[in-house]
Image (cartoon, rainbow, N blue to C red):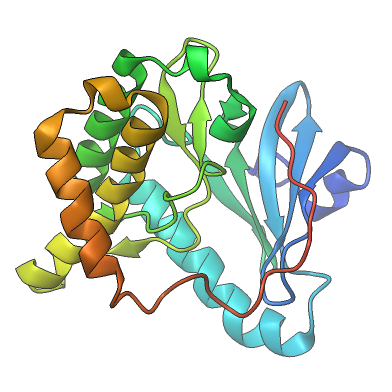
Length: 222
């Protein structure tokens, strides 16, 4: 008997909702409800053989490693496990991503808490690298921030300090953009200067997306 919360065979009997079909080299992402609990499942089983054999093991293994490194950080999924060679499951982070949140709901306190969450993540030597948009930032039911989808993330402990700072700046620019969008009146001169500095640096940033051109997809959150 498996000690995992569920297996590949259980998925056939679970309530499954598509969240993102993804690009050809990315996982199919679903929300799976099993025994009253919701999970985010990333599954490469429908992808081509070379993606399953070469790319999926690296991506899934890296994401699990990063989630375990961030264990205990409030605002990151509490649990993650490997279903099989093609898929992982991550405890579902309840809430709405910022694209589905009204301007009035994004408070100064939320933005300050978001910055604190980034600081805690960076203190664990992890960078997210996909926070400039709104899709990976979640407002939880209690109004606090959370981060999802660590596929593009990196562990930075082995990097030289100058490179680590650059990558952390890429994350911080995501928070600073939210200040400018939702509360420019409270942003302050220091944050404005920081965002301008990082935006100048981003002119030389080559990693704009990964694994090719995006496919059109449906993305939803309850």
